[in-house]
Amino acid sequence: MSDPQLRRELTVARQIHADMGDSHEIIGISDPTLQERGAVLGRRVATAFAVLVFANVLFGIYAIAFMKKKERTQLNTAQNRSELAESLARTAAVALPAPSLEVEEIKFTAPVKDQDKLANKIIAAAKQVGGSGTKGLADQEGVLLFAEVPTARLNDFRESMKKLGATLPAAPVEPRAGDKMILQLRIVSAQ
Image 1: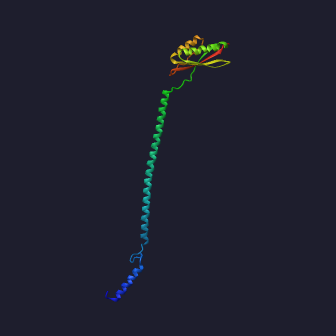
Image 2: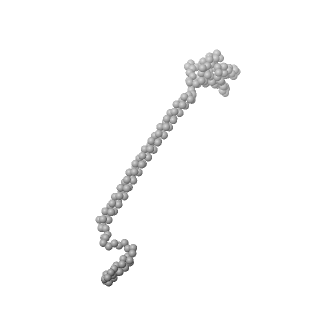
Image 3: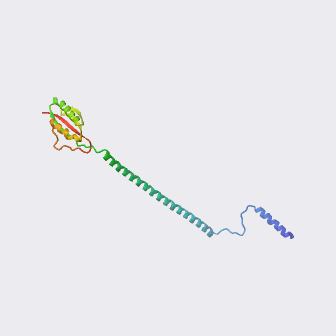
C-alpha cells in the first residue's frame, strides 16, 4: 500500500477483473486434445450402447413371458372348450337318447270301402294298450297310419294287429331305450 507503482498495478488489475465480468475464460487451462475428446465420446457411445442392449434384453424377457402366458391361456381355453363339449355330449346322450329311425311297418289288406273302419279299429287298439294313433291321408295306394305304443305293451299291440289280419314283418324292430315306440301301419287295397 505504500508503493505508488504497485497501487497503480493493483488498480489496473481490479479494473481488468471488473471488466471481465461473466467471462468463462480461465487462464492456465488448455483446451482438451483430440485424443481426450475421442476418449470422452467413446465412453459416451459405449454407455449409450450398453443402456440400449440392457433395455433390449429386458424387453425380450418381458415379450417371452407375455407370449408364454398367452399360450397357456389359449391352451387352457381350448382344454376348457373340449371338456365342455365332451360333458355336453355325455349329458345329451343320457338326457336325450338318439331317436330310432327304424320304423316297423305293419301291413293290412282290405277293400277300399272297409279301410276307414279298419283304420278306426287300429287306432282303438293303440289306445287300448295305452298308446295313441293317427290316420294319415288316403291315396290310391291305401291309408297310412301311425301308432305310438308303450314299449312294455308292444307285444300286446302286435297280437291285436294279428287278430285284425295284419301281416307283421319277418324281423320286427326291437324297441330301443325309451318308453314308447312308433309303428307305421299301411292299409292297402285288396286286388
